[in-house]
Image 1 (cartoon, protein in one colour):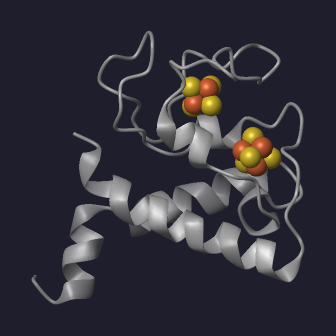
Image 2 (cartoon, helix red, strand yellow):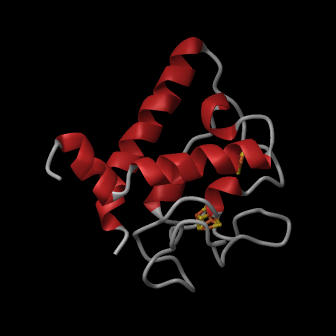
Length: 120
Ligand code: SF4
Ligand code: SF4
């Protein structure tokens, strides 16, 4: 269901992480944030969410302290392991990160992609 967005999403974010690395501004995850465990859709199964996660829905593996209960475990989706903090994505607080991630999610919707390709 959410698979259509995966390729574009991953590539947009990989590019922004790569640019951040190149600029020497890579950063650590902000403790207690959790925006990237709520905003993006995740197409792969997550324990407790066998069909993945829709955009804007809190992952069931995100604890009350906003830390991932699967961190370091093999059950953690590849999407999550590959998502690296960057100033562009994470901003300076939860709201900035959430807004950025939801914007990416909107941009990677199939109808948006079709418009960009001139299909519709
Ligand atoms: S958006 Fe950035 S700071 Fe927030 S949880 Fe994700 S990686 Fe960490
Ligand atoms: S599995 Fe962990 S890292 Fe991935 S969305 Fe859920 S809480 Fe976040």
